[in-house]
Length: 269
Image (cartoon, rainbow, N blue to C red):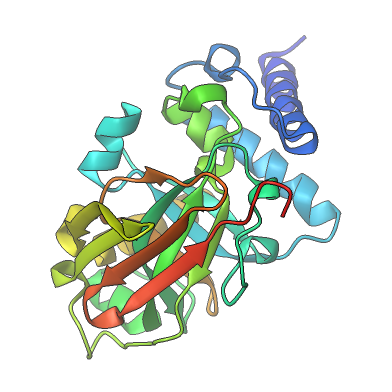
């Protein structure tokens, strides 16, 4: 058996394990021993296989998420570099009365700046000017991260394979262009059941959320799937993530972008 065949078998095994966790709603052990603790390329191959499976049954890609941009979150998870995952249409809970807890295993919430693109980011230098020009507007966002790996026992390999620990997301209604505010300077405060549980600034996200978008644009192009006009980009946490068990009410205030909120349903909801 060739090395390529061995790699393909390993990728399939890891994808099958994560698919099983989705199907059974039971977390699994880490996949890093199967993939290799530091083999990020192989982990992205698993993510791509999971994406292919979802597209084959009718899922629609609406954007990307950037993870592990905040030093606080990196410290929480013991990793030292960003990652990215795929956003699908059925992850969008914007405007819903409740976030469906039944779809989640061990969710946590992060407050972020989300950007919506008006141009592709596929060609050119992808420099700061091009990144800014490609952004249509920004909104306050909550990302509900989740892990199919039991007890969040993850390394970079585990989270990348698991679609960057993606779960669901909520976007606020208020839209601002980059002429209206400076993402780096926003101040974020997040409350769980009216208790302050997380705070930070735009500078916590790779120094500037726009730096995170630039990193994603280059990395996504390197992997052969560049960012496209109309896509949603969740740029990364502005402070520590917090657990959101069923019944939790989350509200985040993100500077001039205003507030975004979500109520998590009872488990059967």
